[in-house]
Image 1: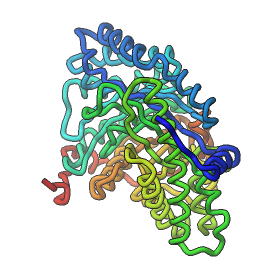
Image 2: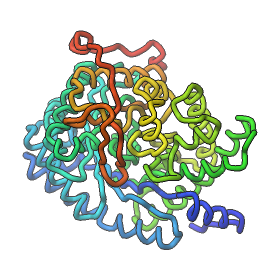
Image 3: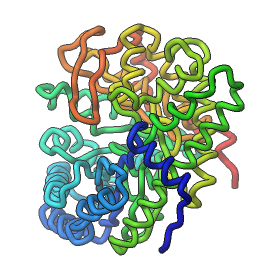
Length: 455
Protein backbone atom coordinates (compact mmCIF):
# COMPACT_ATOMS: atom_id res chain seq x y z
CA UNK A 1 0.00 0.00 0.00
CA UNK A 2 1.68 3.28 -1.10
CA UNK A 3 1.98 6.20 1.30
CA UNK A 4 2.33 9.84 0.26
CA UNK A 5 3.61 12.59 2.54
CA UNK A 6 4.34 16.24 1.82
CA UNK A 7 7.69 17.83 2.69
CA UNK A 8 5.97 19.74 5.51
CA UNK A 9 4.54 16.53 6.97
CA UNK A 10 7.93 14.82 6.83
CA UNK A 11 9.65 17.73 8.60
CA UNK A 12 6.91 17.84 11.26
CA UNK A 13 7.31 14.11 11.90
CA UNK A 14 11.10 14.43 12.17
CA UNK A 15 10.60 17.22 14.73
CA UNK A 16 8.12 15.12 16.72
CA UNK A 17 10.56 12.22 16.81
CA UNK A 18 13.69 14.21 17.66
CA UNK A 19 12.45 16.77 20.17
CA UNK A 20 8.95 15.84 21.32
CA UNK A 21 9.30 12.18 22.34
CA UNK A 22 6.82 10.80 19.79
CA UNK A 23 6.76 7.04 19.91
CA UNK A 24 4.54 4.06 19.26
CA UNK A 25 4.00 2.77 22.76
CA UNK A 26 3.03 -0.75 21.70
CA UNK A 27 2.30 -3.13 18.86
CA UNK A 28 0.00 -5.70 20.44
CA UNK A 29 -0.91 -8.91 18.63
CA UNK A 30 -4.23 -10.40 19.66
CA UNK A 31 -4.49 -14.18 19.40
CA UNK A 32 -7.64 -16.27 19.85
CA UNK A 33 -6.73 -19.30 21.98
CA UNK A 34 -10.22 -20.65 22.61
CA UNK A 35 -9.50 -23.70 20.46
CA UNK A 36 -6.60 -24.66 22.77
CA UNK A 37 -8.79 -26.15 25.51
CA UNK A 38 -7.71 -29.67 26.51
CA UNK A 39 -8.19 -32.13 29.34
CA UNK A 40 -5.72 -30.59 31.80
CA UNK A 41 -3.54 -27.59 32.45
CA UNK A 42 -0.38 -29.01 30.90
CA UNK A 43 -2.04 -30.10 27.66
CA UNK A 44 -3.94 -26.82 27.37
CA UNK A 45 -0.82 -24.83 28.19
CA UNK A 46 1.20 -26.60 25.51
CA UNK A 47 -1.43 -25.87 22.87
CA UNK A 48 -1.54 -22.23 23.96
CA UNK A 49 2.24 -22.02 23.80
CA UNK A 50 2.38 -23.55 20.32
CA UNK A 51 -0.30 -21.25 18.93
CA UNK A 52 1.37 -18.14 20.32
CA UNK A 53 4.73 -19.22 18.92
CA UNK A 54 3.15 -19.89 15.54
CA UNK A 55 1.52 -16.48 15.15
CA UNK A 56 3.90 -14.21 17.08
CA UNK A 57 7.28 -15.69 16.17
CA UNK A 58 8.09 -12.69 13.91
CA UNK A 59 6.32 -9.97 15.90
CA UNK A 60 9.41 -8.46 17.51
CA UNK A 61 11.46 -8.71 14.32
CA UNK A 62 8.78 -6.95 12.28
CA UNK A 63 8.47 -4.22 14.91
CA UNK A 64 12.23 -3.68 14.86
CA UNK A 65 12.26 -3.53 11.06
CA UNK A 66 9.50 -0.92 10.93
CA UNK A 67 11.29 1.11 13.59
CA UNK A 68 14.48 1.13 11.54
CA UNK A 69 12.72 1.84 8.25
CA UNK A 70 10.67 4.81 9.44
CA UNK A 71 12.70 5.97 12.43
CA UNK A 72 9.65 5.82 14.71
CA UNK A 73 10.52 4.34 18.12
CA UNK A 74 8.34 1.32 18.92
CA UNK A 75 8.78 0.88 22.65
CA UNK A 76 6.94 -2.39 23.31
CA UNK A 77 5.84 -5.47 21.43
CA UNK A 78 3.11 -7.35 23.28
CA UNK A 79 0.51 -10.11 23.01
CA UNK A 80 -3.09 -10.35 24.17
CA UNK A 81 -4.97 -13.66 24.23
CA UNK A 82 -8.56 -14.79 24.81
CA UNK A 83 -9.68 -14.75 28.47
CA UNK A 84 -8.00 -17.73 30.12
CA UNK A 85 -11.03 -18.23 32.35
CA UNK A 86 -12.97 -19.25 29.23
CA UNK A 87 -10.20 -21.35 27.73
CA UNK A 88 -9.62 -23.16 31.02
CA UNK A 89 -13.23 -23.47 32.14
CA UNK A 90 -13.50 -26.69 34.17
CA UNK A 91 -9.84 -26.74 35.19
CA UNK A 92 -8.57 -26.25 38.74
CA UNK A 93 -6.81 -23.15 40.12
CA UNK A 94 -3.50 -25.05 40.07
CA UNK A 95 -4.03 -25.85 36.39
CA UNK A 96 -4.77 -22.18 35.71
CA UNK A 97 -1.39 -21.35 37.23
CA UNK A 98 0.15 -23.92 34.88
CA UNK A 99 -1.42 -22.20 31.89
CA UNK A 100 -0.04 -18.92 33.21
CA UNK A 101 3.45 -20.41 33.25
CA UNK A 102 3.09 -21.49 29.61
CA UNK A 103 1.92 -17.98 28.69
CA UNK A 104 4.99 -16.56 30.40
CA UNK A 105 7.31 -18.95 28.59
CA UNK A 106 5.72 -18.15 25.24
CA UNK A 107 6.11 -14.41 25.87
CA UNK A 108 9.75 -14.90 26.77
CA UNK A 109 10.49 -17.08 23.76
CA UNK A 110 8.96 -14.69 21.20
CA UNK A 111 10.60 -11.71 22.93
CA UNK A 112 7.64 -9.62 24.11
CA UNK A 113 7.71 -7.85 27.47
CA UNK A 114 4.07 -8.50 28.50
CA UNK A 115 1.26 -10.88 27.61
CA UNK A 116 -2.31 -10.06 28.62
CA UNK A 117 -5.38 -12.23 28.86
CA UNK A 118 -5.15 -13.95 32.24
CA UNK A 119 -8.64 -12.54 32.42
CA UNK A 120 -12.11 -13.19 33.83
CA UNK A 121 -15.33 -11.43 32.84
CA UNK A 122 -17.61 -11.63 35.89
CA UNK A 123 -19.89 -8.62 35.57
CA UNK A 124 -23.00 -10.86 35.65
CA UNK A 125 -21.65 -13.69 37.79
CA UNK A 126 -19.02 -16.42 38.03
CA UNK A 127 -18.46 -19.44 35.82
CA UNK A 128 -16.39 -22.33 37.17
CA UNK A 129 -13.50 -21.07 35.05
CA UNK A 130 -13.84 -17.58 36.49
CA UNK A 131 -13.67 -18.88 40.06
CA UNK A 132 -10.60 -20.97 39.31
CA UNK A 133 -8.80 -18.14 37.56
CA UNK A 134 -9.53 -15.61 40.32
CA UNK A 135 -8.11 -17.99 42.90
CA UNK A 136 -5.02 -18.47 40.72
CA UNK A 137 -4.24 -14.80 40.13
CA UNK A 138 -1.96 -14.08 43.13
CA UNK A 139 0.25 -17.12 42.63
CA UNK A 140 0.36 -16.69 38.86
CA UNK A 141 1.52 -13.09 39.09
CA UNK A 142 4.09 -14.08 41.69
CA UNK A 143 5.66 -16.92 39.68
CA UNK A 144 5.59 -15.27 36.23
CA UNK A 145 7.36 -12.19 34.92
CA UNK A 146 5.37 -11.17 31.83
CA UNK A 147 1.80 -12.30 32.48
CA UNK A 148 -0.82 -9.61 33.06
CA UNK A 149 -4.23 -10.24 34.62
CA UNK A 150 -7.52 -8.36 34.39
CA UNK A 151 -11.03 -8.83 35.74
CA UNK A 152 -14.17 -7.06 34.51
CA UNK A 153 -16.58 -6.64 37.45
CA UNK A 154 -19.23 -4.35 35.98
CA UNK A 155 -20.87 -2.89 32.89
CA UNK A 156 -23.40 -0.17 32.29
CA UNK A 157 -25.87 -2.79 31.07
CA UNK A 158 -25.29 -5.38 33.83
CA UNK A 159 -24.49 -3.26 36.88
CA UNK A 160 -21.72 -4.06 39.38
CA UNK A 161 -20.96 -7.50 40.79
CA UNK A 162 -20.17 -6.55 44.38
CA UNK A 163 -19.21 -10.11 45.33
CA UNK A 164 -16.46 -9.85 42.71
CA UNK A 165 -15.50 -6.38 43.95
CA UNK A 166 -15.03 -7.71 47.49
CA UNK A 167 -13.04 -10.69 46.25
CA UNK A 168 -10.78 -8.48 44.15
CA UNK A 169 -9.91 -6.44 47.23
CA UNK A 170 -8.58 -9.61 48.85
CA UNK A 171 -6.86 -10.77 45.64
CA UNK A 172 -4.98 -7.48 45.34
CA UNK A 173 -3.87 -7.77 48.96
CA UNK A 174 -2.72 -11.38 48.45
CA UNK A 175 -0.85 -10.47 45.28
CA UNK A 176 0.97 -7.65 47.05
CA UNK A 177 2.01 -9.95 49.87
CA UNK A 178 3.28 -12.69 47.54
CA UNK A 179 5.38 -10.13 45.65
CA UNK A 180 6.34 -8.10 48.71
CA UNK A 181 10.07 -8.49 48.04
CA UNK A 182 9.44 -6.53 44.80
CA UNK A 183 7.34 -3.78 46.41
CA UNK A 184 4.10 -5.57 45.54
CA UNK A 185 5.01 -5.53 41.84
CA UNK A 186 2.47 -8.23 41.01
CA UNK A 187 -0.30 -5.66 41.52
CA UNK A 188 1.17 -3.54 38.72
CA UNK A 189 0.21 -6.41 36.40
CA UNK A 190 -3.38 -6.64 37.67
CA UNK A 191 -6.25 -4.32 36.72
CA UNK A 192 -9.92 -4.40 37.72
CA UNK A 193 -12.25 -3.03 35.04
CA UNK A 194 -15.74 -1.75 34.53
CA UNK A 195 -16.82 -1.67 30.86
CA UNK A 196 -13.54 -3.28 29.74
CA UNK A 197 -12.57 -2.65 26.10
CA UNK A 198 -12.09 -5.86 24.10
CA UNK A 199 -9.49 -4.31 21.76
CA UNK A 200 -7.32 -2.44 24.26
CA UNK A 201 -3.62 -2.85 23.32
CA UNK A 202 -2.27 -1.41 26.59
CA UNK A 203 -1.21 -3.48 29.60
CA UNK A 204 -2.15 -4.63 32.09
CA UNK A 205 -5.70 -4.77 30.75
CA UNK A 206 -5.26 -6.12 27.22
CA UNK A 207 -7.15 -9.27 26.24
CA UNK A 208 -8.59 -10.70 23.01
CA UNK A 209 -12.33 -10.06 22.97
CA UNK A 210 -14.92 -12.57 21.84
CA UNK A 211 -15.88 -10.50 18.81
CA UNK A 212 -12.34 -10.20 17.49
CA UNK A 213 -10.90 -12.20 14.56
CA UNK A 214 -8.60 -15.19 14.93
CA UNK A 215 -5.57 -12.93 15.08
CA UNK A 216 -5.13 -9.18 14.81
CA UNK A 217 -2.59 -6.44 15.39
CA UNK A 218 -3.48 -3.30 17.36
CA UNK A 219 -1.42 -0.16 17.86
CA UNK A 220 -1.13 1.97 20.99
CA UNK A 221 0.34 5.39 20.27
CA UNK A 222 1.66 7.91 22.74
CA UNK A 223 2.90 11.47 22.41
CA UNK A 224 2.26 13.70 25.44
CA UNK A 225 5.40 15.59 24.47
CA UNK A 226 4.01 16.35 21.00
CA UNK A 227 0.80 17.79 22.46
CA UNK A 228 2.70 19.75 25.09
CA UNK A 229 5.01 21.23 22.47
CA UNK A 230 2.01 22.19 20.31
CA UNK A 231 0.83 24.48 23.11
CA UNK A 232 4.17 26.26 23.33
CA UNK A 233 3.24 29.23 21.15
CA UNK A 234 -0.25 29.73 22.57
CA UNK A 235 0.45 32.07 25.47
CA UNK A 236 -2.74 34.04 26.04
CA UNK A 237 -4.77 31.98 23.56
CA UNK A 238 -8.37 31.11 24.35
CA UNK A 239 -9.28 27.57 25.39
CA UNK A 240 -11.04 26.86 22.10
CA UNK A 241 -7.78 27.74 20.33
CA UNK A 242 -5.96 25.39 22.71
CA UNK A 243 -8.42 22.63 21.82
CA UNK A 244 -7.79 23.17 18.10
CA UNK A 245 -4.03 22.83 18.54
CA UNK A 246 -4.45 19.63 20.55
CA UNK A 247 -6.71 18.22 17.82
CA UNK A 248 -4.06 18.94 15.19
CA UNK A 249 -1.33 17.29 17.26
CA UNK A 250 -3.51 14.23 17.95
CA UNK A 251 -4.20 13.94 14.22
CA UNK A 252 -0.48 13.79 13.46
CA UNK A 253 0.21 11.29 16.24
CA UNK A 254 -2.60 9.02 15.08
CA UNK A 255 -1.44 9.14 11.46
CA UNK A 256 1.90 7.78 12.61
CA UNK A 257 0.06 4.99 14.41
CA UNK A 258 -2.00 4.22 11.31
CA UNK A 259 1.18 3.97 9.24
CA UNK A 260 2.81 1.55 11.68
CA UNK A 261 -0.37 -0.50 11.97
CA UNK A 262 -0.76 -0.88 8.21
CA UNK A 263 2.88 -1.89 7.81
CA UNK A 264 2.78 -4.37 10.69
CA UNK A 265 -0.42 -5.91 9.35
CA UNK A 266 1.07 -6.34 5.89
CA UNK A 267 4.39 -7.79 7.07
CA UNK A 268 2.85 -10.12 9.65
CA UNK A 269 0.06 -11.22 7.32
CA UNK A 270 -2.68 -10.60 9.90
CA UNK A 271 -5.61 -8.14 9.94
CA UNK A 272 -5.07 -4.61 11.24
CA UNK A 273 -7.36 -3.97 14.20
CA UNK A 274 -7.36 -0.49 15.72
CA UNK A 275 -5.24 2.46 16.77
CA UNK A 276 -5.64 3.36 20.44
CA UNK A 277 -4.68 7.02 20.52
CA UNK A 278 -4.36 7.31 24.29
CA UNK A 279 -1.77 9.75 25.59
CA UNK A 280 0.38 7.37 27.62
CA UNK A 281 2.98 9.18 29.75
CA UNK A 282 6.27 8.05 31.24
CA UNK A 283 8.16 9.31 34.28
CA UNK A 284 10.75 10.95 32.01
CA UNK A 285 10.99 14.73 31.69
CA UNK A 286 8.94 16.00 28.75
CA UNK A 287 6.60 13.02 28.54
CA UNK A 288 3.87 13.96 31.02
CA UNK A 289 0.10 14.40 30.63
CA UNK A 290 0.07 16.45 33.83
CA UNK A 291 2.48 18.93 32.26
CA UNK A 292 0.06 19.44 29.35
CA UNK A 293 -2.62 20.47 31.84
CA UNK A 294 -0.16 22.78 33.57
CA UNK A 295 0.79 24.25 30.20
CA UNK A 296 -2.84 25.33 29.82
CA UNK A 297 -2.38 27.59 32.85
CA UNK A 298 -2.62 25.50 36.01
CA UNK A 299 0.18 26.21 38.47
CA UNK A 300 0.17 22.51 39.35
CA UNK A 301 -2.10 19.64 38.37
CA UNK A 302 -4.64 18.96 41.10
CA UNK A 303 -5.72 22.54 41.67
CA UNK A 304 -9.27 23.64 40.94
CA UNK A 305 -9.81 23.60 37.18
CA UNK A 306 -7.78 20.42 36.67
CA UNK A 307 -10.78 18.25 35.81
CA UNK A 308 -12.04 20.83 33.30
CA UNK A 309 -8.62 21.01 31.65
CA UNK A 310 -8.51 17.22 31.46
CA UNK A 311 -11.96 17.19 29.85
CA UNK A 312 -10.76 19.61 27.17
CA UNK A 313 -7.65 17.49 26.54
CA UNK A 314 -9.48 14.18 26.36
CA UNK A 315 -12.15 15.44 23.98
CA UNK A 316 -9.67 17.16 21.66
CA UNK A 317 -7.47 14.06 21.51
CA UNK A 318 -10.45 11.90 20.52
CA UNK A 319 -11.64 14.36 17.85
CA UNK A 320 -8.21 14.73 16.29
CA UNK A 321 -7.54 11.00 16.31
CA UNK A 322 -10.87 10.01 14.80
CA UNK A 323 -10.23 12.32 11.84
CA UNK A 324 -6.88 10.64 11.21
CA UNK A 325 -7.91 6.99 11.34
CA UNK A 326 -11.13 5.14 10.55
CA UNK A 327 -10.35 2.36 13.03
CA UNK A 328 -9.88 4.03 16.38
CA UNK A 329 -10.56 1.81 19.38
CA UNK A 330 -9.27 0.60 22.71
CA UNK A 331 -9.43 3.32 25.36
CA UNK A 332 -8.32 6.34 23.30
CA UNK A 333 -8.00 9.30 25.61
CA UNK A 334 -5.56 10.44 28.29
CA UNK A 335 -3.97 8.22 30.92
CA UNK A 336 -3.14 9.64 34.34
CA UNK A 337 -1.07 6.89 36.00
CA UNK A 338 0.68 8.31 39.02
CA UNK A 339 3.93 6.32 38.94
CA UNK A 340 4.34 6.73 35.17
CA UNK A 341 3.92 10.52 34.93
CA UNK A 342 6.50 12.92 36.37
CA UNK A 343 3.99 15.75 36.73
CA UNK A 344 1.60 13.51 38.66
CA UNK A 345 4.43 12.27 40.89
CA UNK A 346 5.45 15.86 41.71
CA UNK A 347 1.84 16.79 42.46
CA UNK A 348 1.42 13.88 44.87
CA UNK A 349 4.63 14.89 46.62
CA UNK A 350 3.34 18.47 46.93
CA UNK A 351 -0.06 17.32 48.20
CA UNK A 352 -2.06 18.90 45.35
CA UNK A 353 -3.07 15.44 44.08
CA UNK A 354 -5.02 13.32 46.55
CA UNK A 355 -7.12 10.20 46.14
CA UNK A 356 -10.26 12.35 46.15
CA UNK A 357 -8.96 14.58 43.36
CA UNK A 358 -7.84 11.55 41.38
CA UNK A 359 -11.34 10.09 41.66
CA UNK A 360 -12.80 13.29 40.22
CA UNK A 361 -10.32 13.23 37.34
CA UNK A 362 -11.17 9.61 36.54
CA UNK A 363 -14.68 10.66 35.58
CA UNK A 364 -12.98 12.22 32.54
CA UNK A 365 -9.80 10.28 31.73
CA UNK A 366 -9.39 7.02 29.82
CA UNK A 367 -9.22 4.71 32.80
CA UNK A 368 -9.25 5.30 36.55
CA UNK A 369 -7.04 4.79 39.60
CA UNK A 370 -3.91 3.76 37.72
CA UNK A 371 -0.52 2.78 39.13
CA UNK A 372 -1.13 4.31 42.54
CA UNK A 373 1.03 3.14 45.43
CA UNK A 374 -0.87 3.03 48.73
CA UNK A 375 0.15 2.00 52.28
CA UNK A 376 0.65 -1.74 52.70
CA UNK A 377 -1.72 -1.89 55.66
CA UNK A 378 -4.67 -0.69 53.54
CA UNK A 379 -7.50 -3.16 54.09
CA UNK A 380 -9.10 -5.35 51.43
CA UNK A 381 -12.41 -3.60 52.16
CA UNK A 382 -10.91 -0.17 51.51
CA UNK A 383 -9.45 -1.37 48.21
CA UNK A 384 -12.80 -2.91 47.30
CA UNK A 385 -14.41 0.46 48.03
CA UNK A 386 -12.04 2.12 45.56
CA UNK A 387 -13.02 -0.46 42.96
CA UNK A 388 -16.73 0.05 43.65
CA UNK A 389 -16.43 3.84 43.36
CA UNK A 390 -14.59 3.64 40.05
CA UNK A 391 -17.06 1.07 38.71
CA UNK A 392 -19.93 3.38 39.67
CA UNK A 393 -18.35 6.20 37.65
CA UNK A 394 -17.99 3.85 34.68
CA UNK A 395 -21.51 2.45 34.91
CA UNK A 396 -23.19 5.83 35.24
CA UNK A 397 -21.14 7.49 32.49
CA UNK A 398 -21.00 4.70 29.88
CA UNK A 399 -17.18 4.68 30.03
CA UNK A 400 -14.33 2.38 30.87
CA UNK A 401 -12.95 2.81 34.38
CA UNK A 402 -10.38 0.72 36.19
CA UNK A 403 -8.35 0.29 39.35
CA UNK A 404 -4.66 -0.64 39.44
CA UNK A 405 -3.48 0.13 42.95
CA UNK A 406 -0.44 -1.31 44.71
CA UNK A 407 -0.58 -1.73 48.49
CA UNK A 408 3.18 -1.81 49.04
CA UNK A 409 3.98 -3.98 52.08
CA UNK A 410 5.70 -2.18 54.94
CA UNK A 411 5.17 1.35 53.63
CA UNK A 412 3.48 4.46 55.00
CA UNK A 413 2.33 7.72 53.36
CA UNK A 414 5.33 9.78 52.29
CA UNK A 415 7.54 6.78 51.53
CA UNK A 416 8.57 6.28 47.91
CA UNK A 417 8.95 3.10 45.84
CA UNK A 418 10.56 2.38 42.49
CA UNK A 419 8.96 -0.21 40.21
CA UNK A 420 11.50 0.14 37.39
CA UNK A 421 11.24 0.70 33.64
CA UNK A 422 8.00 2.09 32.22
CA UNK A 423 6.25 1.38 35.53
CA UNK A 424 8.19 4.26 37.09
CA UNK A 425 8.28 5.31 40.73
CA UNK A 426 5.73 6.75 43.12
CA UNK A 427 5.22 8.30 46.53
CA UNK A 428 2.90 6.35 48.84
CA UNK A 429 -0.37 8.27 48.80
CA UNK A 430 -2.62 8.43 51.90
CA UNK A 431 -6.03 6.75 51.74
CA UNK A 432 -9.24 7.38 53.67
CA UNK A 433 -9.17 5.27 56.84
CA UNK A 434 -12.88 5.53 57.70
CA UNK A 435 -14.44 2.07 57.72
CA UNK A 436 -16.65 0.79 54.88
CA UNK A 437 -16.65 -2.92 55.69
CA UNK A 438 -20.36 -3.34 56.40
CA UNK A 439 -21.26 -1.86 53.01
CA UNK A 440 -18.69 -3.90 51.07
CA UNK A 441 -19.51 -7.20 52.78
CA UNK A 442 -23.21 -6.96 51.85
CA UNK A 443 -22.25 -8.36 48.44
CA UNK A 444 -24.82 -9.00 45.75
CA UNK A 445 -25.23 -6.62 42.82
CA UNK A 446 -25.60 -2.91 42.35
CA UNK A 447 -28.26 -2.94 39.60
CA UNK A 448 -27.71 -1.37 36.20
CA UNK A 449 -28.96 2.22 35.86
CA UNK A 450 -32.11 2.90 33.90
CA UNK A 451 -30.13 4.59 31.11
CA UNK A 452 -28.21 1.33 30.62
CA UNK A 453 -31.21 -0.18 28.83
CA UNK A 454 -31.14 1.14 25.27
CA UNK A 455 -32.55 -1.69 23.12
